[in-house]
Image: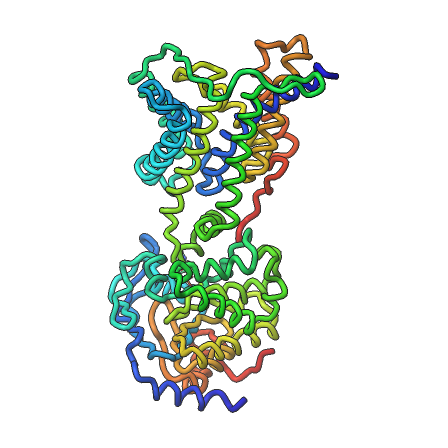
Length: 293
Length: 265
Ligand SMILES: Nc1ncnc2c1ncn2[C@@H]1O[C@H](COP(=O)(O)OP(=O)(O)OP(=O)(O)O)[C@@H](O)[C@H]1O
Ligand SMILES: [Mg+2]
């Protein structure tokens, strides 16, 4: 039992990372209807920015907000320069553009920082808590805490600020939003900026566990896709629940299903994606596509 | 209530700014499809103008050209300011509120949030906050059903309630020009009548200039000062609402528009 709980705790830790990247995917999907395949790579780029700042002597907890601000600006810039020109183009075109962005960012990071792995500082102290025999590392608690704070801030932004209201209106009905005087293009930029910021959090959280290198987020992105698919691509709450579920499912199958073990557990998200698409394509919290009047 | 027709015509003649909205040689369309082929008309400040016509005549396109949803050629000025070449968000900032065909409410947002979005241009100014709150009350006064459902998602409202909400949201902008595209679409006659009475009240109380497109010509003519019959992208008939109603027989025969004195509701 303790052993099982131990695995669950660890699963929640990595699940929180998947949840934050899934949250970034969902944000962009909600605002633009785009599935952003480059989300993980943008997060990786942000992580390098954080690494560079720390390597040049900045304390981690100062480097973090600077990184988030840079990511926010970068996300807005990507929308303006890369996505805006293909606005309204067929879905496949946009998908290919985000895949292209994926490849470009990956190569760019390799060019600047090379493909050799770098050690990323662990922001949380060593050690942890002992809860009735279950060991909870500070780092696990820290990750879950940070993701909870991010969620809370997003909730406050969207539900309790005028700009959040305007953003939700623009996501819900862009044509009517424009008729109400909302500059929808700016809202889209803001959405990409926010998503890049949330993605940056996931990159910075996962880097100490994985080592920093340009391909670091590839695996995480697949788990995040599974999380968003499971939760529903248009549901932020779904992204978080889905992320935690995927994280726990990953550790449990890795630990208890012998045929899978550590090597095959990457298959878990793919199985989840497939199962969801077959049984409930809109995900747990998502809405089935309905024609809008 | 007094007999509407005479009252309306007088108001039109008494208007101090006959060219408040001035449309000159307006052409508009969608890509290769040229829909509007040179419209000329003016709406005086504080007037209600009805645009009638058969399906596909270009009524919706006319409103879309006025609010920047489709590109137009020619000239459209509101109080002297050119509207053509502007985006819908810019037009909104100039005081044009358009209630599109088929409602266009924010279905994920609550009723009150919908109304607040309508006022978002104003509510950014601190001094306007109290006025926005007062306007919310004013809208709830016009549409008591919306107050009852203020915390409900707009998507869960009935069609009539959504139409009320769409109009309420447009009014929250405090527009100087209100464009209504078939407000009666899909509504029960009684609801439609109520809605038109409210549009009339708004027009009388706030002196909001209104351009309303309607299939239900009878209703539109009841609240309008002037009317235009549009056919195949051109104005086929223009004049005071009362006169158009009289010429209704002509319109019916040649345009297939029912403007005869058949009472609805
Ligand atoms: N988005 C569009 N793309 C291409 N053509 C369009 C579009 N919208 C309308 N049209 C065409 O423009 C013409 C006029 O359409 P419009 O919607 O202005 O008519 P309407 O007078 O509002 O008709 P209705 O009473 O049916 O609403 C029609 O022939 C229509 O096919
Ligand atoms: Mg129409």
